[in-house]
Image (cartoon, rainbow, N blue to C red):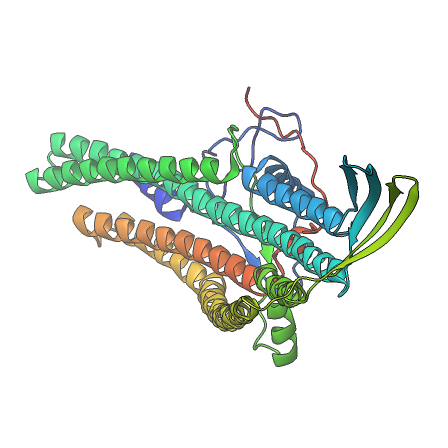
Amino acid sequence: MLLKRILLTGVCACLTLPAWANDSPMYSKAVIPSVYSSPTLLVSDLAKRTVDDSLTLFVEHIWAKSPEIKRAQSVIDTAKARLEGADRPLYNPSLVLDVERSDLNTTTIGFNQTLDWNDQQATYTLAANKRVLMAQAALREVKKKVAEEVLTALVTYQTARTMQALGVRRGELMKGFLDTVTQRQLAGDMGALEGALAQVTYGEALMRQAAIESQLAEAEAALRAVTGLDITSWPALPESLRLPPNQLDKRETEGGIKNLPELQVIAHRIEAMKAGVSVVKNATNAQPTIGLRAGREGSETLLGVSFEMPLFVRNDFKSSVRVASYEVATEEQVYHEAYRRAKARLQGGLGRFQNTVTAWQFWVNSGEQAHQNQVRLLEQMWQTGELSATDYLIQAKQSLETQKAATELMGEVWKSAIVWLDASNQLSEWLGVALNAPVETQNIGERK
C-alpha cells in the first residue's frame, strides 16, 4: 500500500508555479506545497490586456535602479544641455584697443562682430534638437530591452523552479519504490532484478535532481544579474494570456515597426545627420566680420569702419559636405536593414507564439485529461497484478516525463508571448507602464 500511495501521488501530481514571496509585508512567503496541482495558463481572448500591479511595480523598480537606464537618462541631460548651448548666438563681439606713440600719439578703441550671415544658429539648434529626440528614443529602447530581459529571465526561473519541485517529487517516488521493493524482497515476493532496478532508478533520480538544482541556481543567478536585485523570492507570472492574432495587419504592422524605439533612434539620428549636413554647408559660406573704431590722433578725432571677409580660395571645404551626405546615405541603409530585421522578427515571433499556443491548448483540452486517464488505468492494472514492478516503474517515469514536457511547453508559451509583445511594441502596454514616464524607486523588500 505504501508503494501504491507514493506512486499514485507522484504520477497524478503536477506542479504549480511558486508564489512571489518576500520579506516585505506586501508579499507572502514562498513554499513548495506538499500536494501539487497542474501548472495552469489560460490563453483566451477574454484574458486581461494588462498584468497585475505587482509585476508592474517590479519592472518599474528595476528601471529605477538600472545603471543602463540611468546612463541613457544622462545622455538625454547632455543632449538637452547642448541644445541650450546651440540656441545661443554663435559669435561674441571682440574689443579692440590700439595705442601708438610717435610724433602724433594715436589711440583708438572699437569692436569687431562676426555676423551669422547664413543663420547657422538655426541649423545648430535643429541638429541639437534631433539629438535630444534620439536620446529620448534611446532611453525608451533601453527600458524596453530591460523589461524584455527581465521577463524572459523570470520565465526561465519559474520554469526551473517548477522543474525543481517536480524533481523532488520524482525523488520521493523513486525512494518509495525502492523501499517497497526492498520489503517485498524480504518477503520473497520479488527477486534481485527488481531490487537492482530500484537501486539504479533511485540513483538516477538523485543525479537528475542534482542537475535540476544546478539549473535552478543558474536561472536565479541570471535573474539576479538582469534585475540587480537580491530578494528572497520573485513575482509570479499572470495566470492568463491573450490569444495571438490570426495574421498580421499590414498597415498596423508597418506603423508598429516604425514606432519601435530602436528604429526611432535610427530615424532621429538620420534627421540629426541631415541637419548636420546643413551645418557643414553653412560652414562653407564665408561669414563677414565688421568693426567700428573711434579714437584720437593728436588733436584730431578718428572714426573708422572695417569689413573682413574670408576667402575660400585654397580650400572650399566642399569635401566635408560630401562626407556628411554620404554618412546620411549610409545611416539610411542601416535603417532599412533594421526595419527588415524588425519585420522578420515580428513575423517569426507571431508564428512561434501561434504554434506554442496551439500545442498548449491541445494539452489543456485533451492531453492533460488523457494523461490523467492513463494514470488511473495504470493504477488499476497495478492493483490487479496485470503489470510487473518493472513495467509499472517504466510507465510511471514516462508519466513524470509528460509532466516535465508540459511544464517546458508552458515556459515556451510565455517566452514566445514575450518575444511577440516586444516585437510588436506592445510590451509596455501589456505591463501597464509608459516608456516615456519617469520612474520612481519602489520598496519591494530587498535584503540589506
